[in-house]
Image 1: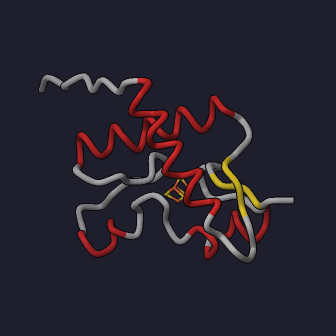
Image 2 (image 1 turned 180 degrees about the vertical axis):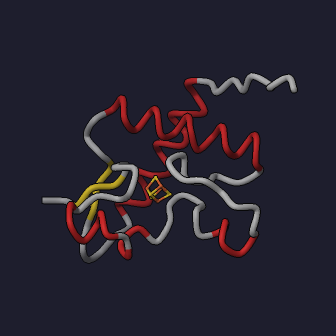
Length: 102
Ligand code: SF4
């Protein structure tokens, strides 16, 4: 099987980061921010956008989709990460894209 190489441009990555940044700005309680590590955020944006091109939805780049539509929808970024153990214990989503504001 020949795998198609997915190209993600710098502009697409910046656009995705802007969407996430605006999302964090809308939070009113239990505030969170984008991980201050730019490289991490860019890598995750690339992963989400690659999933969108390959799998038609912006699935979490750190988790496996199971081909069960209802279950897989829960893995679209941003997910309900405040329910995750990593949020409760470390104040981060599973991928460390979003982190609790101090
Ligand atoms: S764990 Fe983080 S990166 Fe993954 S889908 Fe949820 S919010 Fe997005």
